[in-house]
Amino acid sequence: MLLAAALGLKGELDEAKATLFDATAISKNGPPSFAGFEALWPNWNASPEYVVLRQKTIDVGFRRAGLPEK
Image (cartoon, rainbow, N blue to C red):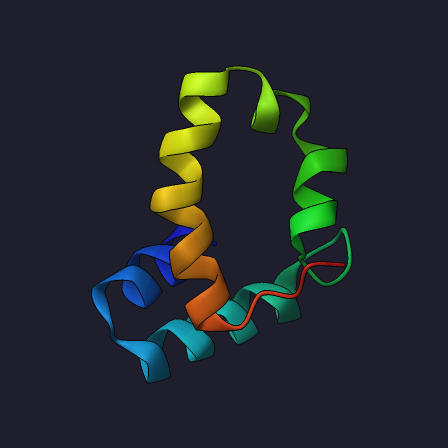
């Protein structure tokens, strides 16, 4: 899943979207989304410093790869 974010951040959008699609297909928790991450990973927002860094990197990559908000 994080590979899709890394590829999106790097600008390899076709591969990022394909990776996200593949991760969605094998997910046991349903389609991934930003809201889903908060539900599955309570520490997703645990540290203000982490959130700022995550928003500048992982979140940007996920959005470029097409991860929905909800």
